[in-house]
Image 1 (cartoon, rainbow, N blue to C red):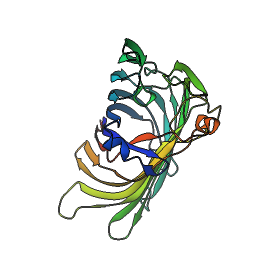
Image 2: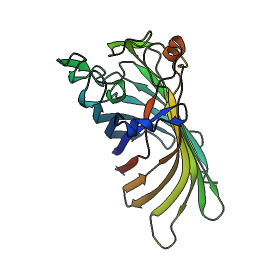
Image 3: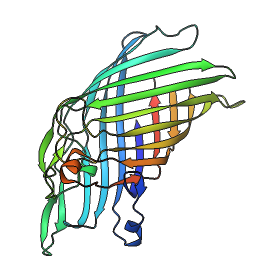
Length: 294
């Protein structure tokens, strides 16, 4: 089981923070609580299959028309797939690499709505912003890579990366935007890469600490299919401290990445309209996971 908490409220255009949003009291606050339940079956020492079922609980205070407080509580997009280790564990060197492929299904709600107020002061049912939708409406596939290498001083280098490919162009859900190319939501690719170094804590059995970096984001253009519709491409680079504790069949980990660079890139629609939209980023996230081996 995994959990992620993330409050996003700092607005950026490119790498420039829009500090006037806080001064003018019109910044947007998104709060995310993401629960992820996973089950993995080890077929052999090298091969395994598994599934992941996420649940999103999100809140957004929208201070421009349509104004309102939007809440989305929904199952997310379920993924199912398999993983293989390049070298048969355990290796003599302690080094190994795994490659995984997963099918992402459109099970999450991608057209959630909420009660809002329009420019005329009327109460209406409006589509929730793309940033808090639990799904994207597309069937996609993800490729991930994990690697670790032992180094001196009882330390270990680690790397993990994942890229979600979404061939679908748009999902047909209307936005509240009137600019050319932004009338419907885009179905975007996503990526996450992280790496660093970890080592056990002396005299504390089962405890290890780690420190590294991570980058996660949405590309301007997808690898496959179109990239039309409304999206907020960009990335966040974070420092990523954490720890891991193992006791018997249980493993608990916690990471608190905090951002050092945020960049809201121009989307395809931005280029069409000759402008550069903004996006709200988080200062930090809190993530932990708990697993049990049977």
